[in-house]
Length: 488
Image (cartoon, rainbow, N blue to C red; front, top):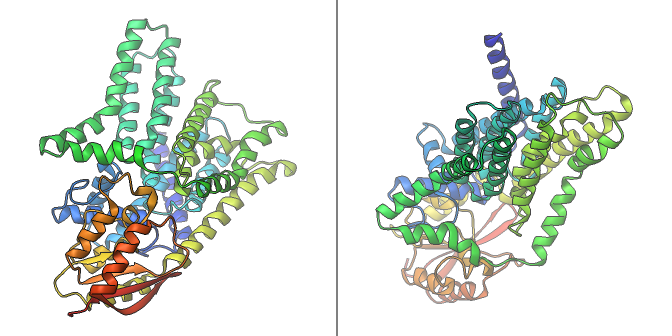
């Protein structure tokens, strides 16, 4: 029986992986899928060249995410396809855990389809390959799976150890994205509730809670200790915790995103909240499991809502618990009950394909990217390349020095980031331009998102005085101007 179960597990994993890869073929191998993924790979690559995250190349994501991408670079082959294959494997593994969790509240055929819903829905929210949730969702799903098992075992003697394992998974996930803190708090509370149900004393509960909390914080404390040991504690704290408190909201645009994304989740809301009123739901294997799954979903929703920026990929942490909770309406046998599940499957597939198509159109093709790289390289004379606007992947493909630690262009060219990065953007752009980069790239579209007019005026002033525009280039739907120093 054991070998049969292992065999079926691998079969399901490869099914999910094959479907995920086939579903994403339109973008597979493309180096400009999403600016975030490009930047994570850039930071990892620069780290191998000696640049330290937060110190020599700045961002506010946890160092664990960049470490993960650095590990991907150890695998021989095309680095673009390598990280994308790891993303597909992580998505398939998460779908597998979703299937196992869904079996607690749904039939096996419905549970398998819950994993498919997740595979389809992730690209609908810009998480096709390498966004942070692609990787930390797996850890949180595994933690939820272990938590469900805890609640199925009353007065189990190993609750403390199981809780440590669960909170360690949460802690590692936090070093990929800090927003999982809210799910982690919910998991910790549910562990304490299990201890309370097992009639633990207050002293035992307090000690266990302290151990579990420290376990969850340990990976972050370890990362901070490493930076403090080499004299960069302030850089770590500013990037990881202080900067996010100073980032400005973008007002009406964020509310539009919130409404759009909650609307896009309508098939999930119908399957989870409306369908049970019209059809009989399968009985859960254990009466407490549905409550645990609902608490996980509520915590994930809270983690999405609290930050107020509501970018599409912030929806992804909700997709794992929502896919599990929607499982009972999938693969229904009664004709009148099938439409809830079919709507969810079809909407997830159409949404995923549509968003990937938009990304392909907007960001451009690998061929365009390679041509643009060559156009830039042809004007390099051993100096630096600076892109005020553009795709972070160009820094890696051009291979020239980067004249600033703020290589993610929106940190210097948007007003929302101006008070958050630790320097004055206008002054930093002036400093960059005074180093006379060989080539400067700037966007030439009229509808600029949240522009920092000061830093943009600074770069345009330098370009008018010291540079000449030698060509324009179209990458996807974006038009760029390329400038070279006049003395070249």
